Amino acid sequence: MTDSSSESAPGKAAPPAPRWVKVSGTVVLAVVALFLVLHLTGLVGPGMHGGH
Image 1 (spheres, rainbow, N blue to C red):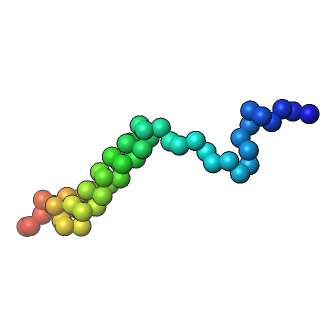
Image 2: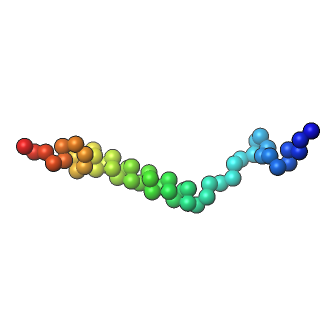
């Protein structure tokens, strides 16, 4: 038989993510949201330098 005391129990929640993971995810989401807003308003992306 194997000792299962070191393994996580099936119903046990995973440990919380480290702070750097949460901060990195927040920064990435903010940059993506900013890009989408600028793209939808026409300030960035194709057609930005147009007007001919």
